[in-house]
Length: 114
Image (cartoon, rainbow, N blue to C red; front, side, top):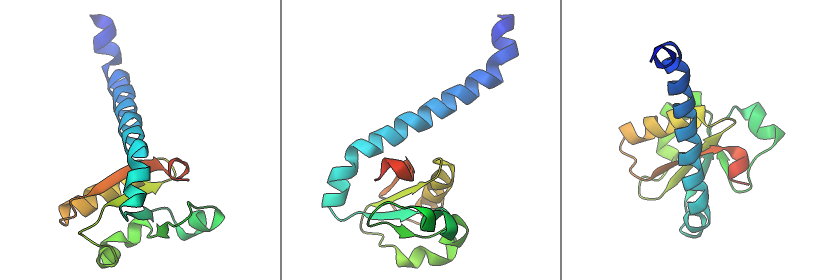
């Protein structure tokens, strides 16, 4: 019992990262269908990160610009967001969902989309 009391924050963190990894893998499995159905692929990394390498067919809207550029994204199509680690894309997904986007998917890292 003392082990759990002592290490519960670490176990919670591991569980959180495990869930994020599992959720991204679910989206990765859906990518061929999402592409075929005309999903928009949005890389939310910085412009410099995007310039150093990106997924073919993706557009770059850095996370800090997303609130002012949401109008560039269609609300009636699937939107796939991704970044370097999956954290910024998780924030992007939350931002889009709170603004009425229903079909938002976090693919995690941009390497998952290539």
